[in-house]
Length: 367
Image (cartoon, rainbow, N blue to C red; front, side):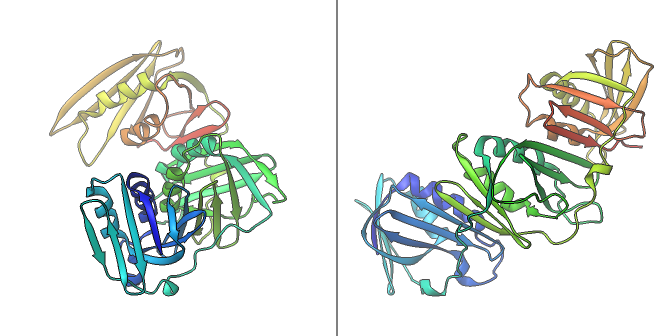
């Protein structure tokens, strides 16, 4: 195989694909990227046996068709440090060579036939979501997924398709994020009631693959795996095992108070108050009184903070405490001018933040 490759474009593709390279030694062969070259360009592949990705590189000019394995870390380092705009890559059973006008790198080769197969997208029944909407949904939910599985949380994002809507849900047991958007079904049925939990690692890679906001994304959810396809990429991933908690029961149904907030100003107030929290406790006390919100944090080692924010509130004084990180995690992914509605019942009941009709974020108060 022989091909002329634009250095920056190939570097970006290798960095994307390398997300699927295993972080620990599962099989030595998985440290490689597999490339298949033909008249259309390159197909670049990587997998850790749980997550696999295929990237189509049309800017690569293939002079000799074939397939090869290229060491991912070494190739990425070469592409990052080289100064040539274009590099030539040659590979056969004896090894691979990467060279430009003034540089040359020789690397050993492994048998490409030994590399695991990565599923392509062959289903004719699927759901379709716009890339821009999906990227925003991922950003608004994935941060709330658990780091470790527990009884009321899972290390991934739940996917649900129902009618002409898709919903993503993430929770770590102390907060819950739910984002919705429109979707089109191409012969695929509803999935509500089933558990399709896509691992966080796969969700993060999927978000990075969604570069063209108007591009359609095809989605297939199977009992044990999920597949996603854009115009130039296919991602397949095993699903997280287990039954997802009933997130609908967590969302408060009634609220005594509904308070309008602007994301940027609210985030600024929370961040200022959080300066005086300590590492063990990010506790900030929120006191709602007539016309204002007062945020107070106090730690014996660091001191005390008090921040006031005007709000449209005319009820009885209400005092409730939150982990400030849980609020800033959500607020930082929203544009500063975003309008939010905070729904509260009392100091012990979870708080619900709403942004329009398509986003809900539930936070458990600290006692």
